[in-house]
Amino acid sequence: MKTITRRSFLKTTGTAAVAAVAVPVLPRGWFELARADKPGYFESEFGITDSLCQKVLSEALSKGGDFADLYFEHTISNWVILEDGKVNRAYSDVALGVGIRTVKGEQVGYGYTQEFTEQSMLAAASTAATIADSTSKKPADQFAQLKLKNYYPLTTLLTSVPLESKLPLVQSANDKCFSLSSLIIKVNAGFYDDQKRILVVTSEGTKAEDLLPRNYLYASVVAEKNGKRERAAWQIGGRRDFSFYTKAVVDEVAKTAVDQTIILFDAVQPPAGEMPVVLGPGVPGVLLHEAIGHGMEADFNRKKISTYCTMIGKKVAEPFVTIVDDGTNPNMLGSINVDDEGTPGQRTVLVDNGILSSYMHDKISAGYYKVKPTGNGRRQSYEHYVQPRMRNTYMLAGPATPEDVIKSVERGIYVQDVSNGQVRIGEGDFAFYVSQGRMIENGNLTAPIKDINIMGNGPKMLRNITMVANDLEMFKGGSGSCGKGGQAVPCGMGMPTVLVKSMTVGGVKA
Image (cartoon, rainbow, N blue to C red; front, side, top):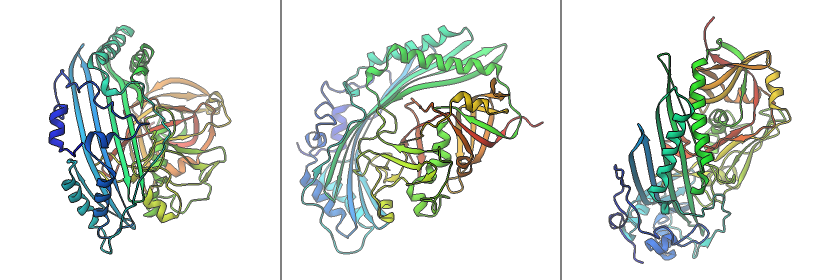
């Protein structure tokens, strides 16, 4: 097949974005020519041959450079949104393009194009090449296809799931929410899915293809009681097959959203000040991600921004604390079969029994530290360059029980859900809004709490973890994305119940 332009492609697949209930339906069989375990999609559909890749890579290295790579992407995204009892919005979006990167030392030249023509790709490669100024290099004579494990297999391609199969999910979530409480006065529900195909070709001779699904079902509710209103939301998803969305999943989304709303009518604000804080399992792992995880991304350490930049091999936590960043958890949002520069997905131990053992590396930082890449080279899309980014970041289970952790606290708070966090990457200072939690009084969970912030310092919080329970839980959401350097990528998180002996709680002043 000849290379085609983006305009010609969009004419065959429908409008790039449609704000209407009638979602454009792709032809039957579209996107089914190549599965993740059967490479060749970009060649069969768009004429991206090895010889064409060699030409483009040669242009990217025409002024020198240590290496270059090509990142082809084709993503189709769909939204179905229900509000006020009816589906009033449904639309699709198509992303298609290639990003071309030339690396010289720690510098990056980058160009991208939405046109899969030789002329457009050579022009983008010429732009990327300008980062270097030396003798040209030649890419590998041939490319070896990576054999990858698949951590998110599909039995049905998401693009072959019709709109009429998604409508019952959002309608059922809506109906279930209203049925659970007479206090519910408004429900928004929705289903999102996208299917991303990528092809990475490197000047070093590596070639990798992947098919990444992503989807989630959500419900947001408003309740009213005695003239007072409260709201909350919940969602479940990940890199899932459509068959994952059973009645049980719909019921769990609805029940959690409603329960977390109704409990807020009885919530109080705890006293302000320094006190013990118990972080519950699952969602509070976002504190681990934001306050600690970013500081272990290698670029922040290479640039001497992170407080961990001199801490490899040193104690950063108690011996019962082990933290990993993992791309291999089945169906989790941050899992990847291969990263965006051709390194297979893998598991990286960051803190090993209290000792900082590794950063998260892309190829540039791995070259700087003279280690192997850890599979953390990620980017938002073909329009963006690679950065070291987290995948699924979580703390392993410890020796205590959740009950023992709570019983050890005479007076403090239990954090169940957090949102709207702010973090200073270098210093590790953070503040997070607690949307769900409880008071701890005399070793027991008591009144629900709301409308407070917890504040602290990431490295200090890590040192102040004095108990870790055996109840590791991964957050099952599908909508979370992490921002860094103007880019957002999907990430997962998890945590067991842990005790932080002291944190600042912004509650009610005495």
